[in-house]
Amino acid sequence: MTRQEFLSTTFAAGLGLAVVPGILSCATPRNTFTPMVPSAGDLKTVRGNVSRYTNKGGTVGIFETKDGFVVVDSQFPDSIQPVLDGISAKGKPVLYLLNTHHHGDHTAGNFAFKDQKTKIVAHSRVPEFQRLAAEKSNKLSEQRYATELFDKEFAIELGREKIRAYHFGNGHTFGDAMYHFENDNVVHMGDLMFINMIPVYRTADGSDSRNWISVLEKALSTFGDDTRFIFGHADVPERSVGSKENIREMISFLTASNEFMLKAIKDGKSNDDLLKEHTFIPGFENRTTPQRFKGFLDELRITLS
Image 1 (cartoon, rainbow, N blue to C red):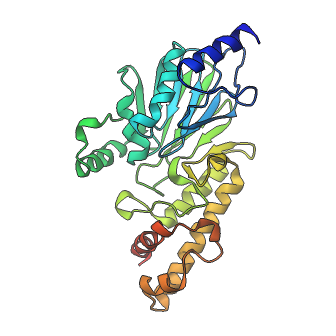
Image 2 (tube, rainbow, N blue to C red):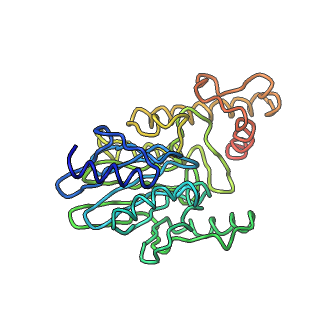
Image 3 (spheres, one colour):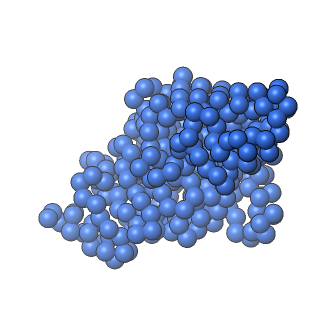
């Protein structure tokens, strides 16, 4: 065991973390960070200096530079804390926190980022919707909002490292953003991507299945075939990272959902009629999510009526 491995193992033990050797190392000549797996979550390297963390809520992206860290989404204060503890032990700051949209399972943990020097980035409509949601849940005092706001694109340069944010329109919400770590060619898609489940779909938040398809098609044309993608939600942690094939499947699902609902409307079928006959969108049994299916159909009908 090398001195670095010994120190990493000792550090991990002190935090109650388990080190997974080899597979999770993202060390480079300018990066000595060894990702570790919090006992309550799952942390894996995606590519280069980009890792993904799953626990409660949306998938978190973690990126290390020689000067500090960039984190994408924050889950909840308790579930993001093991990540913040690990970062703190490295003696580096969180330079940027990037929010993909306003939903609480992606932004409630913002409050745990206590360093006021950390810049929080989001689409310009995220703070207003985050604030509205906090009012409804009586959690206004437990919020931290993005202050670095953008409408279409936003660029961050950290030495040789480049991160670019894109908003291609509303799909899941009015404030959807995807973040491209250009050197490692990894894109965090937020909740524009759900794997093997019915997506959360709320028209009041900006969900629009037709626009959603266009946004995903724009992502396909913007990023290369070798790009790795981090997805907001998946049925198991292992599927929270994937390729363009996953995006194409999501487009197919949304297209089939639109066709399914439009035919029901044309045939005069109510959603109650559909629920008696179906528990998933035909052809997509892999996306069976009983507790979410009725709400998805109700909101989808609003979009397409």
